[in-house]
Every structure is written in structure tokens, then in C-alpha cells.
Length: 342
Ligand SMILES: [Zn+2]
Image (tube, rainbow, N blue to C red):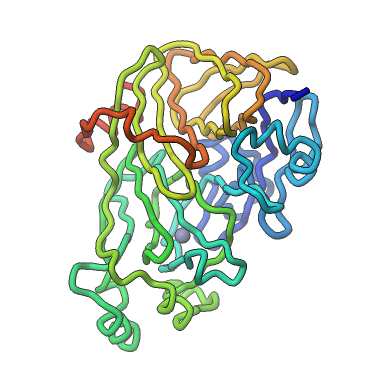
């Protein structure tokens, strides 16, 4: 008989970065030690030496690899992705300075066979925050190589102002850099493979040849997505990204909602507001920065928003979601308003 698991919360894996800061402490509730600059909080990870560990509840202290060995069917349900690793990595980022100008390989170009397609949701952006995403129109390999040789790579890149609520989809092979002043949630394949074109003079290693080889020169400029949305009894649901690795939706919850058994696992990330999750092994606070792995065979749990609660819902790419959505798109001000829970 199939068992079931409670919703799983993990200890964050905090990463010092030269471009990081201390925003994850007061904005995301992360306990940052010392005075160092922290850039990333890996929320659910199973990548190299980094494995998430369950925090609290009946499975406290269990690592993600142990969970997959002991409870694989409960977690994956009908859609086991195969392989030893959990298929997705989700994290929060605090960019205080420019991140490197970089590109990630696709599966075919990655030394591990797992590429890095990613998506970002902006939680917070200082005025005039900017990201670089994709090449300007008309820039091909020849133009990019010439710009690198003359030290002008930035001239080739598409610059986009961003504000809270924006979602940017970055398929593998897309050149990009996150600018200062933003806190984002990042959803990606379980990979840490990055090739740098520029590190803004900070001295970390560059990988120009590998970076050029895994570029998708057909991609062109990339802009924030225009979500498809619908209103349900649960609130406003927006479909942000759907690709061959994950589906990313955002829900602004109007009322309490129940976590129930499903054909596949899902991940909830809280991006606005707060609430509580009543589960069989305890009551958990939900606040901006909380992340929950919901096994396919989950013990029922009740989520109760406290005034406002907006969550990202990340799922493996199974079933046809797109057809459920009316083809109606939100303007960017509407997106920002939804993300604030308005
Ligand atoms: Zn990246």
C-alpha cells in the first residue's frame, strides 16, 4: 500500500557570493551568520556536495538523497523522472552588485548531461533595477566575438528594466546577467554549470570558448513574460513559464486551500504575504522566503493565508496545462499589482 508524507520543509543552504549582501536576512527571514555577503539560499537542492536536509516535523534531519531512496514513490507519484537526483533546484538570490555575464549549457552541451534552463521571479527591485537578457537584435557569433575582443561585450546585450512581479524565462543558451538591487526566486534544472563572459573585473575565472559554444544565437532579446491568467475559487492563478523541465505558476490566494494527493510532486515558494500551514506533524509559518516540497502522495494539509498570500507553484512538465488557460494576458502593471496581492 502506498504511504504518504507530510509537506516537507528544508534547511536553507546559504552561499557566500562576491555580489551578495544581507537582504536575505531581513527580507527573506534567513539566519545569515557573521557579516559576510550572502548571494544565494538554495531551498531545495541535490547538486554535487549540496543536499537539502529536512527541517522539523517527523522527517527532521533526513537528506534529500535519503528521501529519494526511502520514499521515492511517495514523492514522485506517477511521474518518476528517473536518475538518482532530484530534477529541480530552487533558490532565492540577493543581488547587491552585478552578477557575472554568463550563459548555461543545454543538456547536449553540459559535461554532466544536465543543462541549466532557468526562470526568475522578481520579489523586490530597487528603482531603476535592470537585468541583461539575450542578445540585441542583429548580434550573431561574429559580432559577439568582436565585442569580446575589444572589451565591449555589454554593447551586445539586451537591457531590461525590472520591477517586483516580473518573471523572466532564461532557456539554456541565453546570455544574461542579473543587476544590483533585486531579490529573486530562481527555478532551474538541477545543475550548477555556468560559463562566464565577464565578471566585471572581480577576477573570477572566465570561460569564453565554452560560453560561445553553448550560446543559442537564434534567441535574440528576452523580455519579461506576459502571464496567462484565470480566476478560480482559490484566487488569481497565473501561468508564467511552461517548458520541457518545469511549469511555473503563481497564485494570489483569496482563501484557505488544501494540499492534496496529486499525480506528481510540486514545490511552493512564498513570494508575498504570510500564512500558516496546518499539517499532521505540526504547524508551519509561511512567509516570504518559505519553500515547501509537496510530495505527490502528501498527507492532507491546510494552508491559511493571513490577509494576503502569494505563492509560486512549480511542477514537473506533465499534463496539458496550457489548454486550461484562457488566452488573456496581463499588462506589466497588472502583474506587479497581483504580485503585491492586490
Ligand atoms: Zn544564470
